[in-house]
Length: 172
Image 1 (cartoon, rainbow, N blue to C red):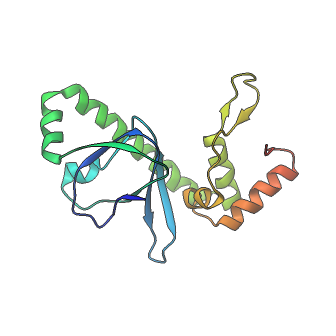
Image 2: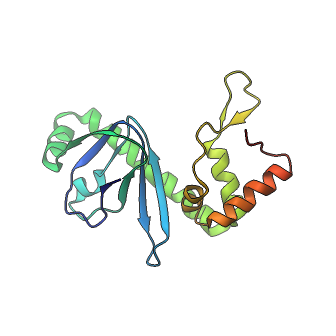
Image 3: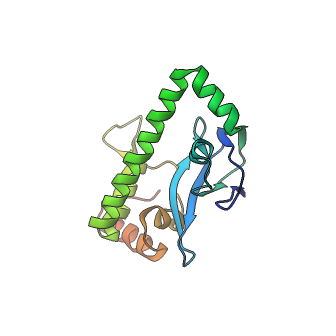
């Protein structure tokens, strides 16, 4: 379900209390580009709240969510009253910029197969029972991985099949 539309005039900042959301944009040809998957403790909408311009992306619920919202004026008051909150927001915005820079570099320098492999590595975490084995607890759909890596679902399917055939991954 759509929470925020890129064309929306609303400038509220939303906080994800429960659930997961996908921050997306669409190319002129209609291809989905995933900017981020956000879970509890995350927020979105701060860019429009801060600069007063339009939304830079749409946000879709991936599952049932509980959200909280704050108006741009209330956000401004909060940031002025509590500098620690402003500094924390700056740190999160810097992280967004660094992630974007990394993605731009990947799109400019890596082939689709390498981008899919890097995304799988980003999603993987060491298992608690064996830190030498990494796993992805909630593997996104092939379409989601494709949108995140700037490729097609078919390329993701071929990459997963090749990695499995080479013994580099195992699907359980």
